[in-house]
Length: 97
Image (spheres, one colour):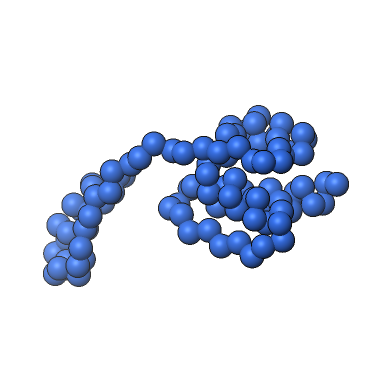
């Protein structure tokens, strides 16, 4: 069920009495991708490519770069935007070398 149908169904309930304060539609935008200054280790790069996880989004490339530098990393993006890869790719690189 898409979000519009869900909201319609929710607000049509007899128990609904205006609990939702605000609904805003934010249109999608085209994904932005980036390359890493230092490419991923070949095995990891191949695996990610086979699973359709390349190219990296800009937030992933930035997070991986900062993690490689030993910096603290916090990523706040929408659901299903690849945050897990931001953290797991540097770990996989570290344990595979």
